[in-house]
Image (tube, rainbow, N blue to C red; front, side, top):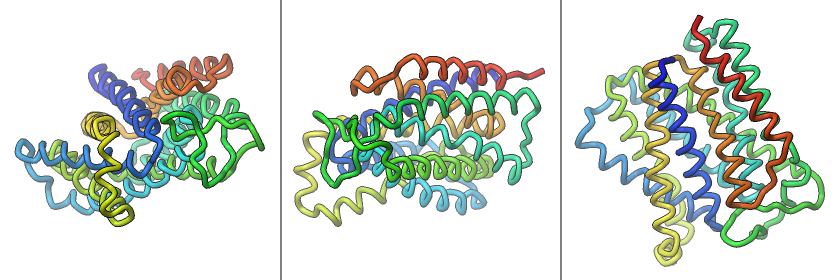
Length: 303
């Protein structure tokens, strides 16, 4: 992994945490992901005139990835509804690197060397620490109500112990991330046009949630979208930038180290949760973050 590729993945990590925070900050998650999907679709359409179409071999991967992305968005919506951003986002992101490492070794033949394997394990351990510290206090009670304060869709409730429905949704979100990471790693390499692959992926995945929202909300949808439209569309455009950088990086380096480095977004997400959503961070998460940084250093070892 060259410094340029590493820098692109780190920028993607910050951008990804940012668009997730924007989506979480909109109380109505269906509206949030409708706008994120719509913004992504508009961005994809804008890219089409400048991008050659992907090769025929890439289209099965594109269609599979779009389907997995829709599942991912639905699971992420559920996670954000049930729990704090600073908990749900790290758990979802932290599940993916080890799964991607195993899948890349099995399906792509990309086996990390001993230094990279140690780094991925260490970074993942740090991610788990960031994700799980304080989980008993920060998952909110599983209810059908909105909960939360202000615009946030997350909770911060302190009653009742861990809500396993929220935890399960976050872990399932992480598995879906691992699935589309591997599928897109194979697809973008066979596309002959990374930009074209990105554009079509954003268009295909961006259609689903807005279509569902239109069917559910019908004529009321436009009026509901208007007050949060600017934030939601910005989130959609940031999502294109975040995943576009990752897809480009996957054409330049192996999947497992990229997946692990990308999860540095967890630190950004935890910081956003503490600063903007007033969620706890604390010394244990700082220590876990240091462990993750050490793991990333080993992961990027080349000798």
